Length: 127
Image 1 (spheres, rainbow, N blue to C red):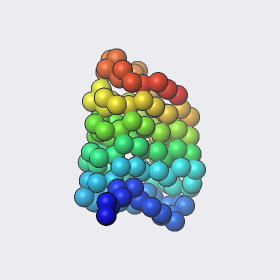
Image 2: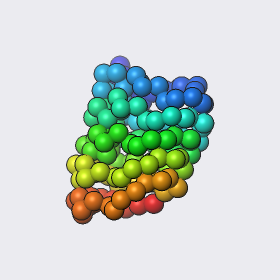
Image 3: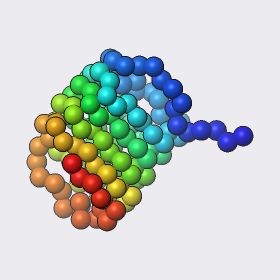
């Protein structure tokens, strides 16, 4: 029997995002949309190289996106829209070869888009 790498159900709707859900680096999707999560995105997710979908939109998250998350090689969706996230999108974004969708609007992001965006040949949607 094949073990699923998606978390089947988690019944959290508020508070901080749990930092230990990608313990063994086998998580493929972090989908925590439209809740009331607060605080910063845990640094531990920057080491979750198996993540394909990082979706935490429409919460009350603050701080910066841990730098390593911008460069996770297997991501195809980054969705941090509708939070209070600050700071730049780092040049590590050029390492995400399969990134097709980036939702980052309605935050307090700063700086210019890095030159590495030119490497994102599959990027179809940038909001």
